[in-house]
Length: 556
Image (cartoon, rainbow, N blue to C red):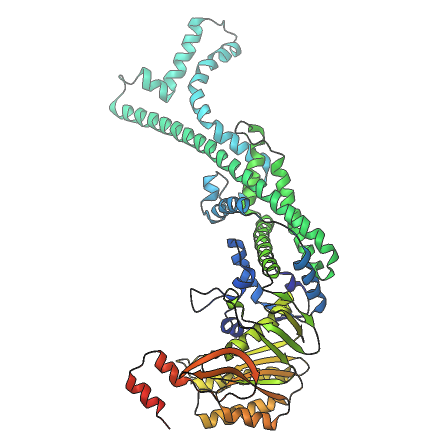
């Protein structure tokens, strides 16, 4: 099974399922939108698409690995074409999904003796029998005409036409087919039926043998197509594997990945060379049929070869992903980061806005941050952008920003889209449970660095208890030296209380204004606390009945 290079190093941490879902790393709730990793890697093949999910599993604090990765993405130069892999992969899948493979290609299908399929000499004999059986059936009557000569010789009788005729006639009388020709009109009805049945069986058996022989011939045309597409693909992927392996020689943190790559490369290369020794592939090559059949059988049943082929397909997908990432870097949509003792972004933006002239923000995470602002002002997008780009930098050492310095984090905690289930928990209980989970991990892993994002903390209960719960929880984690967080809220009182009581907390707002009685959003992060209220305008813009909108605006 193919694993990304990051999976071979020690200092890696899993990305939780909550983060995968909340940040839409590999799937989206809106089918018209691309997942975050699809935006990054922009896969051009089905193999690249299949590889994307692997990137969502781990991040690392290993600086050496990330610096090696930067060198790889920045300087490794290659081109990728998919025509050869597409042709072979289609045939490969047909073989793997064919439950009648053994019967179709006339392999032994009995569990007790199917080990014989691993022996070329046995498959050679079996194939020769299947190809020759119709000829044998047809030759038997002719052979009966030759046997008398040997019998006359053995009996020391003169070889004459009369003696030959006598022996032939006696043989015919004792043979079912002979009786059918010479005595059919003389025998009883029951014997006529018997002779007719035996003749029918003989003819049917001959017919079956001819069909088997023709199927064998047809199979070899298919086998040659499989082998040809295999060598075309194997030559191509082995070239990529070898080139990549040579490049990794200067990337010490990739050593274990390289070892695994080389192991699978050797298996594929050995098999490919065995096919090439049969070239050119011709139907008339009867003396290497056993070798061909054995090589075909291995494609279906050789575990090591199957794993090596599967590995090569996924490796191709990995290369496709690298090409997509390199394209984003070349177009300046993404840039490489650096390590520092605090986290800072210059011109940070949300990945999904890559093609829509996004508003970019400068963010410094020296202090814990509280972000206020009206609905739709971009608060949640800022949270997601920060967490995503920290994760990217700790995976591929680059992100959607112009510059970044990252303080490596060991744990990420994400409080977004808390579900209100139909089970035992209310929305507030689900929120409280999620926060308690974070707290347990933070306390247990007190020597590790944690980064948390909270979107509308404890919004599932009444404002008084929501503010009180959030104030107590945030005050607690703000005093922990190993935790940094960002929080969004609509509760202005909470913003004032937290900043007043915690010197490590800084208030920010999303710049918004009411112009001509309509909210205008600038999506820029500024210091301060927002007092803009736009909730009623949302009702108006959604064309609620006028009486509802008017009553909402007049509410005191």
